[in-house]
Image: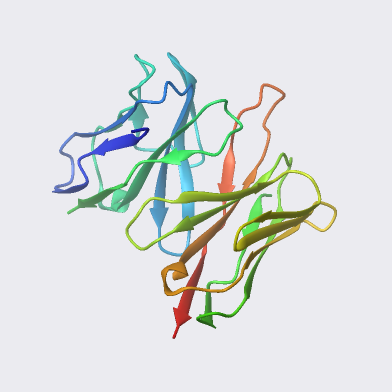
Length: 112
Length: 114
């Protein structure tokens, strides 16, 4: 089954404790992206990747890092999480780049 | 700047027709997407318009006017399961390489009542 898998689905943690949200897709897609979704603001892009070892900032990259060492994986790293990063996060992928994106099921992060 | 506007909430009756509007202002334009998102779930793709006109897909249709920066999603024969948020997203080409920057509206929460 074609899918984008995110882990964990839910996480409650404390300020400053590094965390990684994994994202994996099994569709051999070149393009992958991370979004955060906050009430009243819609989905905002954090980082995206056009292919392996090619990443760039989206609209709200501060406080986040990503890597793309393999085509299927695109982890989101919060080196020192803060409460303003409490949000619902979605990973998405597509191929070619202009096709509709497939979204993962989301990760709800709470930073206390 | 970049801006996408949709109504925050709408209500409708089962079996009726509802139109959800979306207006946009972006620096570039190369297509408009509509996604459906049930509460707590991932967005799922509904429709895509890149040329002016109407695209029909079963009970759902989407219309685009590029000159007016306007689109709408039309849902016919509404069912209870159509209660969800509907997200309008514009693809804003950054450069000719086809970077797929999607700018999302905040979404319209549709409640369908019996």
